[in-house]
Amino acid sequence: MKVYSIKTQLKLLMLFLLLSQVFACSDKSSSYNENISVSESFAKESDLKAFSSTEGIKSKPTSEDIQKQKLKIIKKGELKLKVKDVKETTEQIKVLIGKYNAYVSNLRYENTSYRHQNNLTIKVPKAHFDALIDSISTYAEVLDYENVSTQDVTEEYLDIETRLATKLQVKERYETILKKKAKTVEDIIYAEDKLGYIQEEIEAAQGRLKYLSNRVDFSTIQVILYKEITYKGTKIKGKNFGSKFIDALSFGWTFLENLVLTLIHIWPIIVLTIVGILLYRKRKK
Image 1 (cartoon, helix red, strand yellow):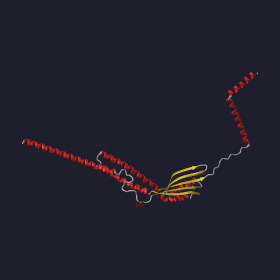
Image 2 (cartoon, one colour; image 1 turned 45 degrees about the horizontal axis):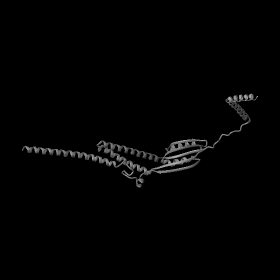
Image 3 (cartoon, helix red, strand yellow; image 1 turned 90 degrees about the vertical axis):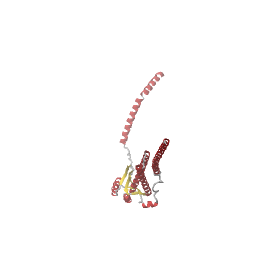
Image 4 (tube, one colour; image 1 turned 180 degrees about the vertical axis):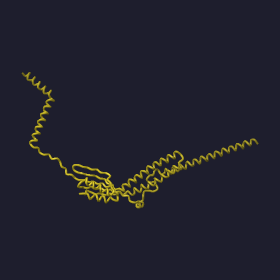
């Protein structure tokens, strides 16, 4: 009876140890599964790979999208005018552009013996572009040329907007993961790195949109104003006898000064020459 009691106790002990092991394994399994779910979540996010050109909610804008979008047209004009007075015409144009809510972004004035010229770069709201060009042309004595060019950036603008919307949505997903699903230090660092990279791309896209919008809203006009000047060289007048006489005296005096100075410089040679001549004569006698 006593032996049976010991066996029973041993069996109960083994059963207890076995159950403890089973529960421990199940806890590790659940913890492992949780870590796998977080890693898989990050793996799905990493599939976005920093928004390559073929990824995103939408592909490149279709022709239907472009038609719905308001056209984004960049206008540029070039004028070259021959005018009566460059400075006066410049002031008149400055007054004119003020009426059209435009402004001068660059000005360079050149003044040579042959030409007076002023180069102006004018930024004007697109609604007043044609009217301002026509008004400036009226100041010309001669209109050398007038060029107007346009650039349609509607497709590029819409494409950047689409990509920007995608980046903002993915940024929101990473922020959600960082707040709710990131458990380990590695997961947190990974999410923060991705957020930093996405934020840089968002800022670059926003900057490009702002640049295009400014180019579209304000057209550019390059204006060259010039006036040709007849070159007048200095005429050399003929000299009279008195002037020639004075010049001759001056030249003679200068020649005499130079001769004396030359003799002074070579006095050793002169002395040696005289001594040599005297010795030669004495020996000859």
